[in-house]
Image (cartoon, rainbow, N blue to C red; front, side, top):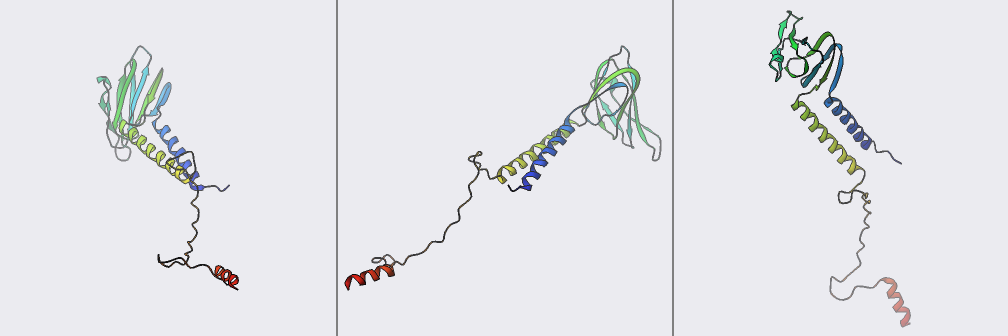
Length: 202
């Protein structure tokens, strides 16, 4: 059985894109007493089970300021520049209230949440924003549909009957033209017929 490498490559592309999409869109979960993780540009939800508010830091790299957006006014704010020259970082200190807190990071780069406490915190992070998630989904759908259609056609399937393979087109034989009188009178008989007529007369 001959292996169709193009079909195998298309199938491998589908698997790679699907794994990439799932890994990009799935939320990350963290828990512990000393947390330090990247927050990305999606929604961050942190659960503080203690009865007191806890100090939290958001740190970023570079000179680009990041902003925290939330329905809770206590969680809103913008980072401040730290250091000089090549050692420039961004820092935002805020207090994490009890219960669930939800916020989003806008702009900035390399933003991490740092929580140093003895309280066991739980956090869930969606690393991509809504627009980025939509783009990933759109690219994934286009690639999967395109690769699936290519495999469908390359395997010899027909759109009118997907379960039946297309039968190969038979080679056409050249048409042998017999002598005619161009529509006037009868067609000339073959040479063998003429010999038969002569033998009967003799």
